[in-house]
Image 1 (spheres, rainbow, N blue to C red):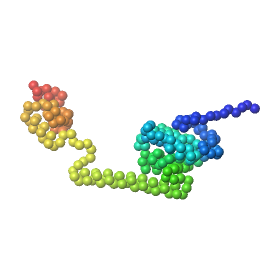
Image 2: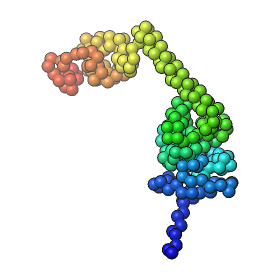
Image 3: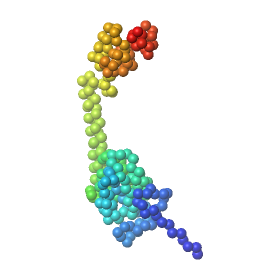
Image 4: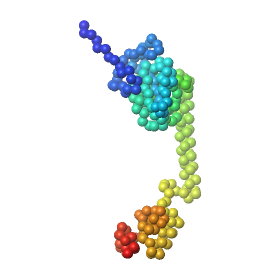
Length: 237
């Protein structure tokens, strides 16, 4: 009978998984084993390399995580390679475990969205510090409350933005970039041009605006049929 080939796993928890290699493995700190689809998978993150992951890793290992993915980077950044690898690695029946909620989500809305996607895949979520476990009734209730808070936060931002626009409109301020040429500068530019002793380039420098801006805002045709790029030379002659 031919000998069975022994398959080994890459011990580096930060390495991205290859394919669907979800064999039986021993859970650290216990004599139990877990098969693919019934594992606790940890995710840890620190903002800088000067910070230590040891506290999070120890807590996740004590929680029985079979594998721990880790990222170094601010929680506000969108691209977190090991989080993406972790989410890809999870299977139906697994549980994603984090030390604290803010290690996973960029914001409350992002956290709720991630957990909702996990639920759709029948993956549980557990946060150790907050004692949240979506496999329990209390855990599900807490996540529903978070979802309601995230929606409230979004509506509040929308209402404040709308109120700000209405106040600006009532005060005569329209949206968009500020005008480059204010009414005062426009009047000064017309007066300088009427005197005829300054070129458009000189007027533009005096008013700290571009020459093209002057032509666009003053709505002036080329002088005596002279193209704009040649007008200054004609005036200076």
